[in-house]
Length: 367
Image: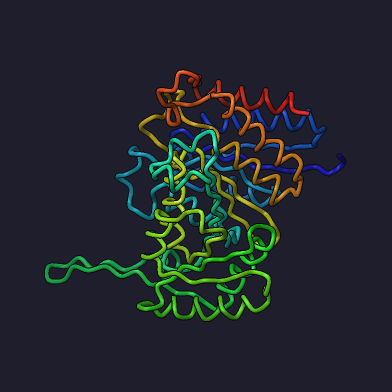
């Protein structure tokens, strides 16, 4: 291949560096196996960047991301930086502004129940016996998280209250809706839009715009659910969901719920994209400081995020499929990290580094 792909690596804090090391193993196999010109450069972000440079998102890191074709992100945050003012803490001061800076308005989080892990789901067997495959499309840079950048907090002798403002513009809703409907066309052709239009003005606009956009996609069915009802239906009938379209706050919450019913958040990848398919790819589980440095974190979410990177940004679908199928084969053969381990005698417990090596080996030997 003649094209060079530039990738910025932001390992961050907590388990980020550990799982990123396993992701790099997979990238090295891809580089050699598929003769890919892959230019990888690493940058600091989050708490470690605060320690080194006094900023969670240094200028060099911003420049590195802007000069790359996509970003592979580990995790940020931890107790060490909790004493900082909220706006200076690693996540608030790095990930949120990075999303806005790169205009990453669409977040994609797949929640699949793999057959070899179906016993890990907290749901009843009769509910998950046929598996489920939910694709959560979350609007990422609008809504309540960005409506009032600094918010307002009044804490005087007489008055104590706080204000956060939710704002959505029609064009923001239109562009995320188009993404959801286009993705549904290549799946089971069903979009479920989530709102709270019986209470919130932003949700009234959300539903109105979604209905308007849906007319461009007559082959895709659309239904609406209030967010509270959706949270119940995900538990009751997850198989009924195909593409779930959510505003920022609701998507943040419901995508975690979708993830939890798969059995482990350590299995969940995510992609955040802009209009030119530039993406930031990261595991959904966070920095997990309680297990950091123990070599027990699950690297699969990060490795599946790499699969999404090749699918959505680099458009190399055969590489994306090879990575995902390697993960599935490893799981079918009984290899587990501690978070997905049970008492089954046929399961084989692996460390973080061993799981990364095992997936890399399967990928290397895949036809």
